[in-house]
Amino acid sequence: MKLFNRTRTLAMKRPAATSLSLVMISSLLAACGSSTTSVSSSAPTAAPTTAAATASPAASAAPAAKAAVPATVVLNWFAEPEHGGNFAALAKGFYKDAGFDMTLMPGGPSVSATQIVASGKAQFGMANGDDILVARQEGIPVVAIATSMQKSPQALFYHKDSGVKDFADLNSHKVYVASTASFWQFIKKKYKLDGAQEMKYTGQLVNFVSDKNALTQGYVTSEPFTMDQQKVDYGTLLVADSGYQIYAGVYFTTEKMIAEHPDQVKAFVEATVKGWDYYKDHSEEINPSIQTKNPDMGLDMMKFSASKEMDFVFGGDAATQGTGVMTKARWEEVQKQMVDAGVLKSAESIDKVFTTQFLPKK
Image (cartoon, rainbow, N blue to C red; front, side):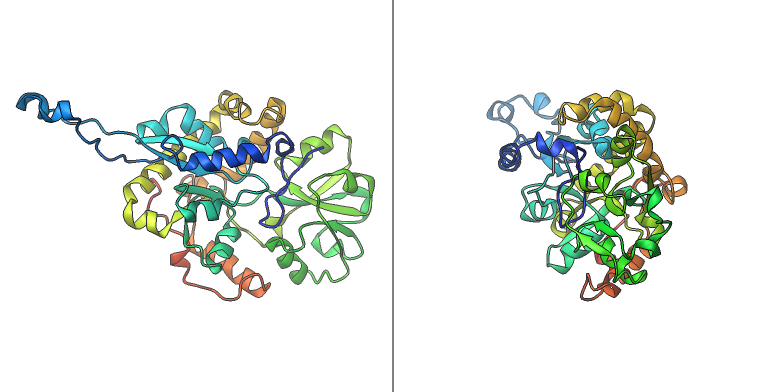
């Protein structure tokens, strides 16, 4: 059964979760501190060896090659096409060309990308835009530096014969959803869904499939593949259509990293954007490398996911302003919605939340 959810409150989202153990995640976390798991974009010059120091003036005058600096990006879930740009950048050498010895660390049920990056065990991470705002409210000094998706593929799925047509129709229906998920708090308040029956979301579709009156959260890049196979006659309410338009798969780093290594941040963003632009037309070339990290996700499903995510990555503002772009107006709107819904206690200067200074110039 397909597992999906990328809210900050529930982890189950991809079927691969069951095949990757927490032991593997722990090993990766430990490896983060080692010299083989870091990533950097602009590496410092290697220190000369003793032999080099005693070499002839002519030899010592030769420019020293830059050493790749190890660094890590913590993904927001197990490896999947939603990370296609990162895997393309790794496979095609874009990170290497930028000076990185890059490690892509998978996320998962027990992995907090914001905490790992904030601790200094990784240089970069991925999270949804509302997760960035929540993290900052909790005192974690992360900053968004680019986004993989212009809007979230998060959705609510319903049975077509349930009578549901829009968000306002959810009263009297069971809704399998993370009760503290930010998008659900917004939708409940906007559409006055006091009569909706909140059910505990387990990450599986079985309860939804067996109950014609129920809805479930999921991603349009994934759940439809499984439901189509099971011949489920379903409809879709894209969360972004409710007015809650967060950026999804946002790349972030820390305030400290930006202050001390802006060149590395810039190189990471540029290489990642280049990776996404490559993945757009070469997803089937890159997907096998993703599958090596997530063998339980078939290539047919990866092909489906990749095709469904293209408009989320390259549509909207990205179509005219470039891959990864973010705007102040969007961030301010989402922050206000989260304050109004009671998810955030107060608003802060949005200029501290995100920056576009490292994105490639159009």
